[in-house]
Length: 87
Image (cartoon, rainbow, N blue to C red; front, top):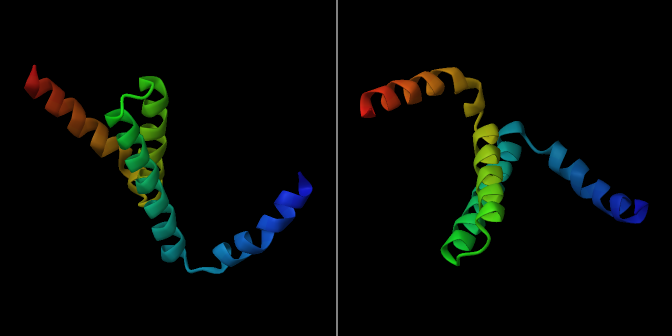
C-alpha cells in the first residue's frame, strides 16, 4: 500500500506547486467530467442510486472548486422563493 502512495507523492507535490486558480480549474474540469459520466450512466439506465451518487459528487466538486458553496445562503433563499411562487 505504501508503495502506491509513494508513487503518487511527486504528482501531488507538482499539483500543489501550481497556482491556486490552476488547481481549482483542474478540480472543476475533473468534477464536470465526473458529472458527465454520471449523466451518461443515467442515460444508459444504470442503477439510479449509483448514478445519483456520481451526479451529486460531480456537482459538489464543481460547486466547491468555483467557491459557490460560500453563497449557499442566498441560493437557498432564492430556491425557497421560487418554490413558493411555483405553488
